[in-house]
Length: 221
Ligand code: PMT
Image (tube, rainbow, N blue to C red; front, top):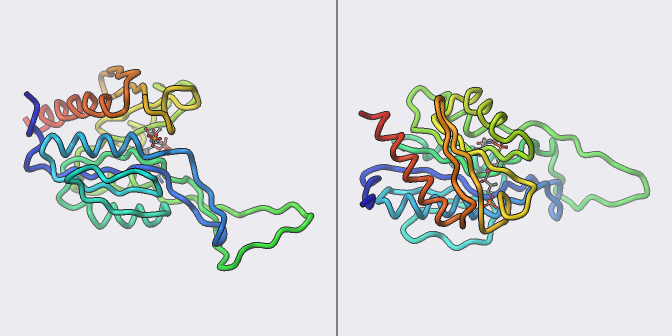
């Protein structure tokens, strides 16, 4: 009954981790597999949307009918999102973007010695916050990966970043969050919330997207 609810709409999804290179063989990364974001891209496509998926380094096949743009670093993901953001109706930020990147990336492999060493890091740009700050912006679904007080921190991010919806994700427990095939999410908006899962990420993505579409339709009425 919900098929085609996003037909004629454009949906942009970020998924996976970003890798911040220290030298040609070492990087700073995280445990995101991209499964959640890829499942959401596939679900949006099944709803008839024109879907662009900006993917960090992951080992997943491209969902059928989805336009995929591969990136490595947070800066590259930022550039790819900004190049595609015009004319999008919905932006889903499921990627686990690095918050810090090395100040310098060495072009040769760093040699080890007995001394300890440090890597100076700078903050990366917040892609979701930059999209939210635009004068004309799509409907925004952010994610929040938290180990404690999941809902409270997520509600803070919803307000701080000026999002429409945020999917709060418990991480650091088995069967949810990074790498797992299943997930549990609390979807939070200004005056409500709804739990999803535990369920396989593919099914959870469909249910989550149905709820997101409800909110988009309410907004445009
Ligand atoms: O990929 P999987 O293995 O399937 O795991 C799924 C997931 C746990 C990665 C995913 O569901 C999830 O929770 N993604 C967000 C993880 C995260 O890094 O959250 P955050 O609290 O650091 O960031 C908050 C929001 O801002 C996110 O929507 C994030 O995409 C966005 N962000 C953050 C930093 C940044 N520089 N740019 C951003 O756009």
